[in-house]
Image (cartoon, rainbow, N blue to C red; front, side):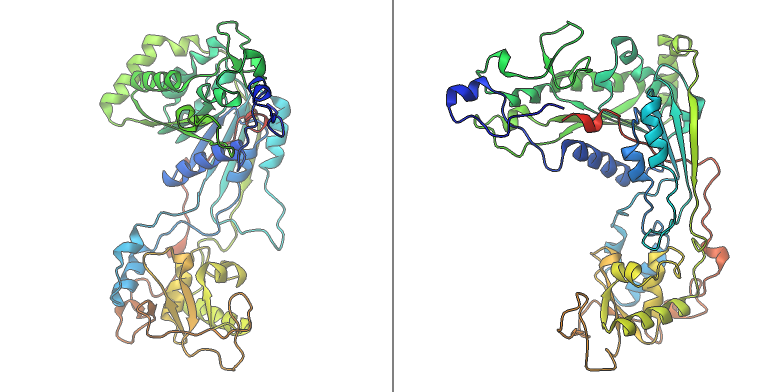
Length: 476
């Protein structure tokens, strides 16, 4: 990792002779990972292979369970809102903020690093503070190189490769796109790589080459100074864009290119905009349809990647199974959930509580079988509870409250202040069951919950996620 001086030299002449301080917050590796998570969540990806997974930092994050199941009761929530004459259409637009992987796959050439990946992705021992898991997760750790083909990867939904391609020798790089986009053909490919354009930010515009610390191009093809001793190249923005667009056109994909990582320090020469981001990122989306399938097949035969691939096989080092909680998909009846919620509010001495906090602090996740929406529906149906909601907000920010307030004069706020909680029953967002609301009848199609209705069924051929490059945390 390149280390910059802690402070800039006071003398202008010295400044031009030294490397400038360039720092990032959050750290650049975390910003890259955040971009990956953002895409995975938005695209609702459930299976990922990370090529160059290293010690398993990203896999470990993906093995953390979401606090609840994916939303599955949109119709009931919409009916509930409509019965209160609230704009239910606003509720529909909210994206689920959590990922729900069902299979995680990591591949790397380093057996030493993979030992850590195996340890970091193993199922944790249950503790009183651990989150319940609601969906089963399978993890696979493989040892091997990109040159070898693995039929297990053929159906993976998304392949991730962060800070990897710049480490590949030319003969391996030329097979990167043919193997991933031509053989495995994932729906999405996410890659990141350093921006050589940004490297000018490390020195003053007129600084001599000696001012730039780093590593000369080990291939001798250029006179560039790289950020890591193992980098075989670092591309400018134009070079990276050209490569992405070329391979996307060749293999029937669309490429979306951007960047992450702006330094904390303001550049004295106002180059921040022109030099761009520290890391370049690209998302490749597969073009669908029979025509594009034929394009990829023809291109694959043209380059001969199947015959050129290494005959050595990847080695499966470990598999893990993360089992869901026994209550997952098996909630208690709505009336029971409502009674438990009422008891929690009375026990806390709080007249109103946010849904998200009541879910975790009130330990109502297990009675609900992992379904957050059931907590809201049970409260709305209960005689002594009401729901204060804004359809424009996420459901976990809604509030469940006691219809008649607390029985005593002593009340607490959610933050345990001495103030009484004032419940404004005139609010347009204060809603509860009405006597003539059809959605609240026990005979309604969703008013009575059975275990058959809530079983979580995961296809046997469904998959999961991945991990970061082993170089990711060791460089800017």
